[in-house]
Image 1: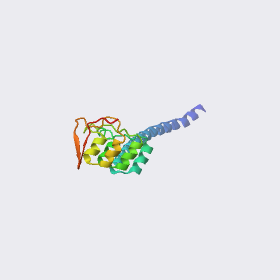
Image 2 (image 1 turned 120 degrees about the vertical axis):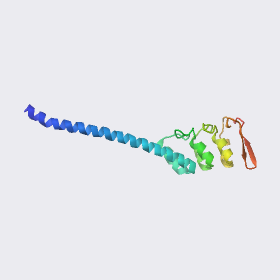
Image 3 (image 1 turned 90 degrees about the vertical axis):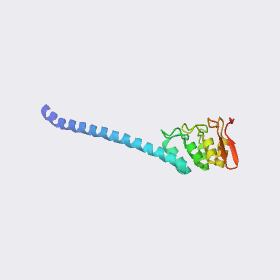
Image 4 (image 1 turned 60 degrees about the vertical axis):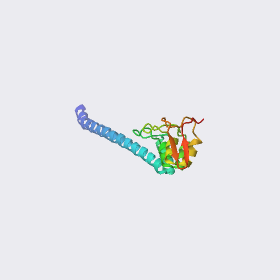
Length: 160
């Protein structure tokens, strides 16, 4: 009788091993898909900031749990706020500031803050919104002045 039980259990053990191997394979695929989804959400988040889609930005920040001062890896710390300010997306800038984005994070490629970048691009309303929140040195480290139409903003001061 013991032989009969062993004969029946043997194929079941093999099936179990095959199933476990398939599960490991599916877990690897799931991790890969999850990582890819995260990357896509991060890229969509940055695109929403650049394009001024506050609703999408709000939704993605909630879904991903990312901070409002998020920057894509490999972008020289070009944060959501830096990109929105550079593009003159006032409503997105205001939303990000209200959500707690840090005003003074510097893009390492251009060595500029969101304030400097907005001023350089001539986005007067964004500059005003950022100046209302600035608590630290918001200049470009090489102390350049930014000519904005008829106004000249010199970003050499420390705002407290």
